[in-house]
Length: 156
Image (cartoon, rainbow, N blue to C red; front, side, top):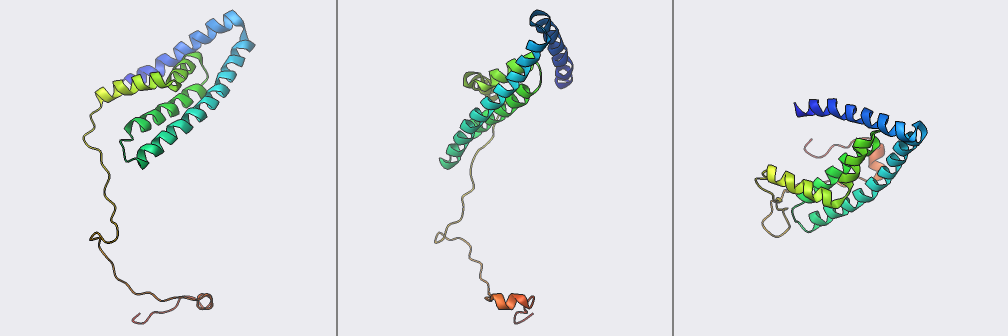
């Protein structure tokens, strides 16, 4: 229900802002601002996204909880979509999501509302620690053998 409300109210807000800003500064400066914020937003999303990706990689390599890094990455992705959407309201929300303090506050709010039951990684089997060994036979195929097509193994 709230999503339907958002799809109805956001365009109304955007149209109202376009009319107000266009009436004050004119059509061409208004369109120039919209295009400029799209380019600036794209550049900022790339920079912030690269930082979020490096944080995610470090959390995976350190085997720590990647929840915050994933949430920051998702918020940066949403910011990119909002910044590419023409409008002043969506640009304001997109630029807000690109600021780390706003993302941290949003993450803290979401963390209170979402309950994570468990986080963990499955151990990977390593040699010499009782891992299962699967035995098999092989036949070495030379390049000359592959020219004749598939070969039959003994017992086929």
